Image 1 (tube, rainbow, N blue to C red):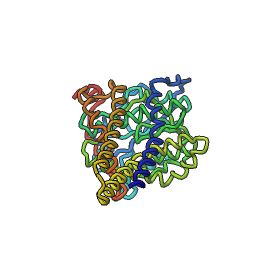
Image 2: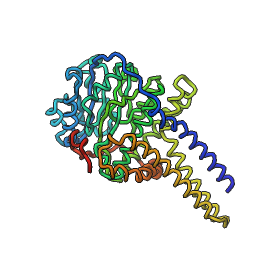
Image 3: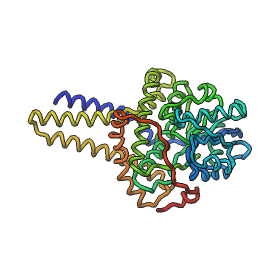
Image 4: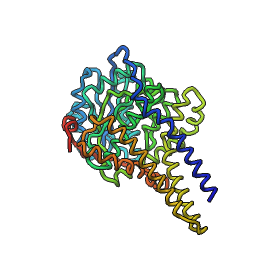
Length: 418
């Protein structure tokens, strides 16, 4: 029993190590201002959209792209209709996009689709046709000044930039709200503080930009793990690239609403994080002692350790309970300890959710009552990562597309008060 308690204390100290520096992240956006932008140059961008059976939502993304305040002759929209069985390709062409179609039942996933799209663009337009590339998912909606805002940060010298990620169906239920709060927290209290201190930010799936030089240095888009965005982030950090963040560039995307769908997606994410650790973990550990040491440390701390330590904590608590039962020792102290740890985790997550919600109150598109109510379910949403992580380790995981049904305009999202 004493050995278990000692290990529990060590795990608790590791938790503190993983989380303590992020307390500073929570404070930085309130005490430090963003640096002013320098001289802005109009750059030419290729807009990359990988779409699989997205005929319902894609027209709204294309509409927000047509309504950008950025010069229309400075960007070209490309859509790759990836293994589609609906009219995604026709819808994309009708919306003014340059469309390529791909049928490949073996190399499945967004990474392969983006690679194929970039190869087609390079073959038909040349390697130097565009200064940068912006990646979006078909369910995204963009603020009218999205491209202009990203271009200002690009002109400041950042070769990779991620954006402010909002949710267009935040108020659907506790699952979509849980995702929404996680992404808002990532934007406001992870990437924004990193930008403020000059560290590297993290790319999260959609709404990001990278330069032609970055693509060339990486040898093309060769990121095919289950979480190709995390793989891209790790690769860039190890090559010394600094990923920037543009708080002014806002997009909205659709979040899952079914728990089964959410479990499947997050299992893929966890398995993808494990793949990234297996491929880049050694380099990131060694990188901690190099020039970009903090970015490597930060990347490691935000990849998997917290969920791994959470699983270890639960296993240790279960071991302590079994040991108490076998030795006929009182079990109430063990049960109380587990309850205290669970309650502490709940309150800590509630505090993070509350800070995020109230600081971003006007940007969350749902009713005030729902904003407040989902504060209480947010910790539960995050805690479900623990059994999901266990399942991701024990069960086979493969890439599967997420169905998108929230086909609404940007105006409808902004006025949602359900």
